Length: 339
Ligand code: NAI
Image 1 (cartoon, rainbow, N blue to C red):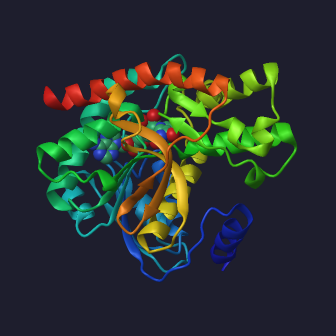
Image 2 (image 1 turned 135 degrees about the horizontal axis):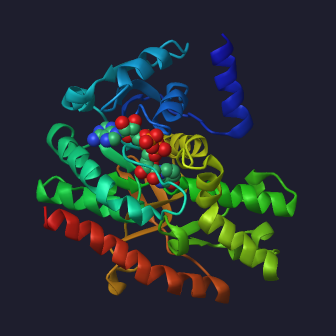
């Protein structure tokens, strides 16, 4: 009873979830035993559009599943131990991947590449083999490289569909709304900021000029706000002092993006949010993947929106973003080609 009313309260107060259609979906979380995986699994258990939840990790997933399965929402939950990846992926429509190591103080997301690249590649090849039509949501960092790794791995297996692959950049959007709302003294719902580019430091480009509240922020306050949106993750890494990076706010953001995709897959129109996808926008710069507003629909990626009008400051941010993003993408591609 409590959980149901808590879930309802969560839905209505924060608008984390909304559901307007009837079709339900099997969702797998790979890395479900981790700092993000556990709260993400809990939040997905309260999403009315999830009918079945498959929780997989190389350690701890059956325990998390047993715990989460007692929450009194209708979805069923199953946990899968290290040797049960294929079973976890059987029949899934959506796979969310928060598997891999997080940052410690002083590390950049790129420092995680050596460990996480092979984890993500191996999970992607299992998805390609068992559930090639699944929609794949990549949380594992560095997202700018792990998304191309998944794409190249699936392409090698002959099953890559660019409409089904998403890098989750929602935490940048959530932070931008929260930080801008605090400065403007308004509700975060009124400070919806489009964040484009990639998901690390200078590749994160918030388009504050396109929001009424964002546009009003000028000078040093603007510079500080942009820096805080780009490097907000460092605040959490520093405060956790070696114990990891953002987990709770990331779980919230991951659940929010998963719900948006599920609504799109269920036929809801007008579900639009930034996400890092294969994109035509900067292909002429040699950049195949880019985050901008994307309409999510029954096929996954329905429509990729251009950036719209940018301020001179945003043009500068974009100039700094593009070469770094290109390097990160090439690094991911090269990893799969060499392996
Ligand atoms: P964590 O270390 O708490 O959890 C990671 C989990 O992955 C562990 O339970 C581990 O057993 C599991 N794992 C490792 N190898 C695996 C494999 N081959 N198959 C399945 N599971 C495996 O780390 P945390 O804090 O949950 O972060 C996970 C990832 O998410 C990190 O790469 C982190 O950088 C990234 N992240 C991404 C964000 C984003 O905005 N996209 C924000 C915050 C973190």
